Amino acid sequence: MKLVFNYLSNPRKDYKTGKIIGQVYYPVIPIKLCYGHHIFKYLINSLVDSGSDRNLFPAEIGENIGIKIKNELSQEIGGIGGIKVIAFTHKVKIYLGNLEIDTFVDFSYEQKVPLLGRNGFFNYFKNVIFREKDNVVELETERDFGRI
Image (cartoon, rainbow, N blue to C red; front, side):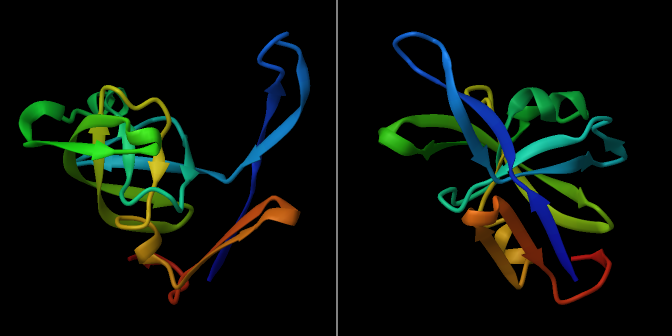
């Protein structure tokens, strides 16, 4: 099964004037997140990030589905420019269309954008293809539907 998602566009601003000077496109897909018997009631637009080792979400999302974020051991996660954040790992389910993925998410109070990374998301798919010219991301599974 192949899932295809169009990139989302955001305005690009001139940092000096604040004026909008164009559009920038991001590979963002809508997911649902579940912990135990609690499902986040809104779709979460999550960035498909090939530069992210793991899934990293804002802690507020986890709290909204009943996760006691700080109940797990913390770890430092490094990012672009050497910036580090403190995160707490929790087992969750990600729903993407008809797919149910048993995985984990690192939650951080310092993170603002939900990131889907290579370990915990990409590794559940046969292929993850970024078609930049078409502003499309493709996720290909070996199964048609169900749990992966």
